[in-house]
Image (cartoon, rainbow, N blue to C red; front, side, top):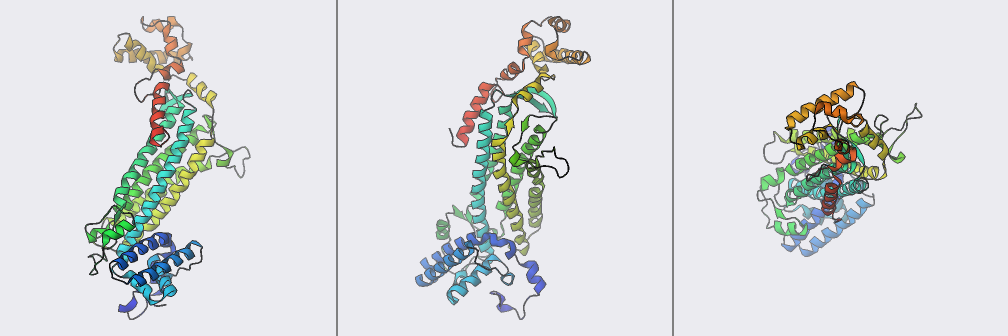
Length: 459
């Protein structure tokens, strides 16, 4: 079948060239967006008198029929037609005759594919925002149920201070809130229309770009036609935002892998999100969490890949830019699946509160409160810190914990110690004492929860 653009050529392209340069194997993902953009374009052509009202309506009817076939899985795509744009145009001509060839009046594949990508990114960005809200909701519900649940807080993966498990979970809520904000902000740059820029310099037809923007619900149009067809910043921005989302997904997944291990035993993941071993029948492996963590690398790779493609391109459009699609399609698929899995993993995990509580009784994570206790009695904090360090060493050497020491032993290090030191060092009181705004005290956590509820529209 002759190519729609083949008039200037005296022979067909080499079959290997067709197979190597064709993008239809993956850009058929854009079928809905391509038809959506074409419907707006041909509506405008009819309104501007560039095609007749009858021709415009015939083309629109044909496009709707093709979309219906695609959605039912009845459409056949051909490598010979290279990409989704040429495939749909060929289907249209086959459906309604030569008038289908008028659809491409006043546009190029360059501004057409850019428009498709803007529509695709807008749709998927809005989807990701909703999926992040689902994860935030799951985190929030689990936090509300664990405000008084105490576990060790860590720095350097060493026990640092007793904290509320809710406080730990809410840290991830705010990470995802930033992710959501980045995606919401990116829509300002996604929602700009490139259609009408032509191949690079505009068109001689009296088109109305702002009417197309209105029909497609875009906020504005690109003011420069060369920038319109060559801009892929919005795809890079999406890949960057998705990379940060995967960082946060990976960090939380890592913690769930650690917490569910025999060494920690802080949580148990539901059987529905774990797998067994082919040889060790006792194993319950957190494979889903591990894979969420592992898939981070492929998203990073797509970001670096597109940056590398774009870094040396002269204006305007170049075939290299075809490489923007597979990476973002795979990223959207990867991150959509990850977010859809994470919410139910969080909802169904069992929190082992007694195990967490026991962990903070068998460490020295309340040591900071000894230093704070002495500082509140007037001792310079640096001196209080040094005294506390000596006390910790003393307790370690005597194979005891700080709450196991007698008051007489405390007084060996400072006469400022009184009986109330033991009350101050109880894990619950250590947690409750952090009353500074944003701290782990239950009262402050409830303020966080109230704010978090507002952020996801549950306030």
